[in-house]
Image 1 (cartoon, rainbow, N blue to C red):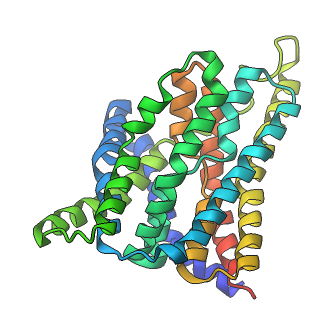
Image 2: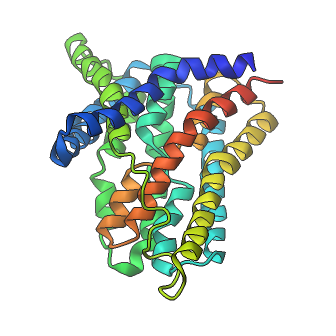
Amino acid sequence: MYVEFAVALALLPDFALILLGAALRRLLHLGDHFWSGLEKLVYYVLFPALLFSGLVKTRIDWSASTPMLGVAAAAMAAGMVLGLGARLLPMTPLSFASQYQCAFRFNSYLGLAVAGTLHGVPGIAAMSIVIGLMVPFANMAAVWMLARHGETGVWRELAKNPLILATLAGIGANLAGFEAPGVALHILGRLAEAALALGLLAVGAGLRLVGAGAPGASGTPEMPHRVRATQTHAVAGYLLVVKLVAMPALTLALIRSLDLTGLHADIALVFSALPTASSAYILAQRMNGDGARVAWLISAGTLLCMLTLPMWLALSQIT
């Protein structure tokens, strides 16, 4: 219990910023335009700077990182496979395709913030590698499931993804032994500091806790609303268990079987226990999917993660 409390206390500032973002959106009435602009600033400028600077500043032991990457890949693959089980529950194909991505997609902003809290710059660098390698596979799986509904150009989207580009640039600079000038590192450091705080505020501002049981794509029009709501909650519950329980449980088992410890064990476990990213909602909306259900899943998963993530980290410390 003491270990779990200590971990939760260490992560409290990150989760507090998420709740602050939710409160600011509702109290200050800044409007969707402000928060949309903030998300673009974080996504296209601040987080790429954070990824690149973390990778440039840290000398990476690639041989030691390989098991961590393997565990992270195995966890995400398990989420993809288990997520298919939701198709057995009553819902339309479009609603399933929209919600399926919530079984394995991950919130990079929260992952990098937690990694920095736990292990500083080396933690950010390690999480950057995991994110850079996993984002393409997560995006391709999500788009592939929705592709029948009209989305094209997935490869073009991946090729211009700023998080992937920044990670590849940082890895290349790291392998080449590139040392950035002090002024450049200072500027990148300032941007990186802003990225963590503003990214978490944006996550909180995006929380939506309505829509899970509302009439929509899940269920059939002939069903009473109460029946539809029950079935929809069953789907949401299943996907949340896959993302926040099954994936980290498998990761913890793999970590112990491979004797992973320290930074690499923590980063693999944090990655597998992250809630779904808001980009899942954007994708569902853009492809005319069941955006309301996805938004609720993202919000519920983010709030539940405040309890489950410290729990998994605490369990990993118990021998």
